[in-house]
Amino acid sequence: MRLHAHEFLRRFLLHVLPHGLQRIRHYGLLSNRLRATRIAACRHLLGVPPAETRVTSRPDYRDRYAQLTGRSLRDCPVCRNGHMVCVECLLPGASPRAPPNDP
Image 1 (cartoon, rainbow, N blue to C red):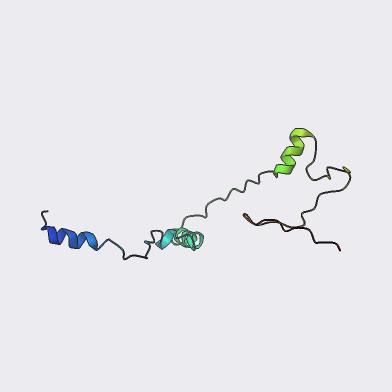
Image 2: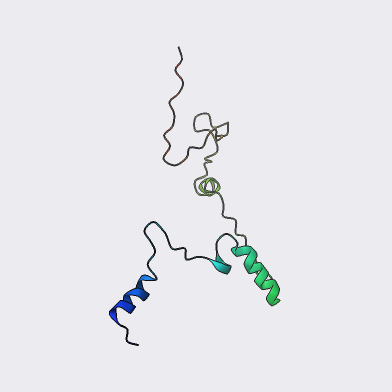
């Protein structure tokens, strides 16, 4: 097909979004938000049995470390009697706060 330059540019610019807008490519049946429910509905309508879900639980890294080294990361490194307890989790990029000043 041959097009004049003006017609080619007109058709090409139909695909260019205005500044500040972003193209959304994931939509329809496989959009992230409703993927599982829509695929389940499709399977139901097609009469296909639900897919088998394999749950593979990976061992915790602390358990794996204990298996490999014989030492537990959950035990206190000083007294070796008590167990370590998570008191606070810091968000990535957050700096820990300083201890309070005792007068």
